[in-house]
Image (cartoon, rainbow, N blue to C red; front, side, top):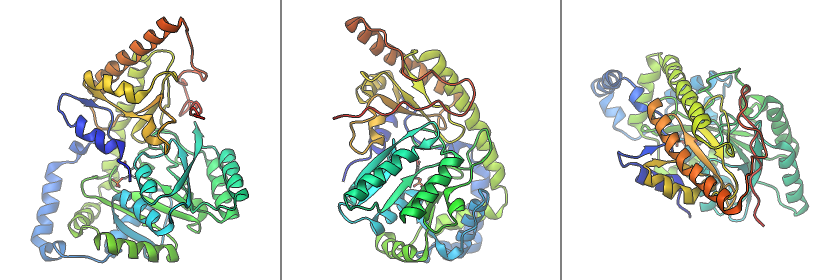
Length: 421
Ligand SMILES: Cc1ncc(COP(=O)(O)O)c(C=O)c1O
């Protein structure tokens, strides 16, 4: 087992003087306290005994119907029997790995991948292979080559894990053309795809792209969703949608883990969705986060040296910045913390912990625009110091291989991660 770099960081960044661009926290202060109070009061008055009781392992049918309503907003309509309500999307990932992975089994994911998935795969002793991404998401040609190489070794991946929309950590979105190719590859090679989609509804510009689950019809795609980013991470409600043979085992795994997802939290979610205003709340989040994203992109433009590049996400919560390859962002974080600002070093998003050392994940959802501007300014100072120091020592003036941020379009291409021998 290994520690999640982000959980360690959260302890440090809890200090009030630190501007944290490190977490992946939604801004829960936007949820009206009066609505929360009214909903919890109604539960206490009308359903106290049920809300305080155990519930079914798979979750209440009413909760599953709410989940289906959320999925319907992105064009998906699974059978209720194929849904299990979990303690956050994180538990869904854990249960999927618990169900499918024996020690040494191959799992494929993106490079960089969701940092919270790294400890999941390693705790089940998966042999995790990463496939590079660019501005259009996972490189399907590289994925195909990886599958081919593994097949030559007589090994078949247990699943391919992807965050196709507004990826954590890179903010990029898998293009429609690549989505089609990915679903076709999974079908042809008979490999399960795990689609993790916490951010699909947090789109700030452009047209929605269909989820892999919708394109595939749910035959090869195991879908993972969560209410964390569109309602609250504190209630810990997520879900998985899987074909019946896999679902059966996931439910057994959940029985062993926690018997059922919090009944009280499910009752709260039901009150909330019953009130029928959930789309409006997401719209309000999109407005706020769009402005914060813009503040971050402007601040990066103003404060980061020209040697740096970064993505321009059309949604989600994160920007991924790449610095010259002589800067190790884990070392840089120590300097940044002295300036009371934090980010997630890129190495957390790589399984071997060595690649991506010159990149960083920056979150724009949980700080105000002023904090974002000040936080990016402080990071810009420590980055510029490193660049100047390097250039003074080596008399070198290096420019990035890829162009700076695009003036239009969703993202700039990511530079391929540095490969270590
Ligand atoms: C890609 C991804 N998957 C899963 C999760 C876990 O979310 P939760 O357990 O709060 O539903 C997160 C949280 O940041 C995430 O970004």
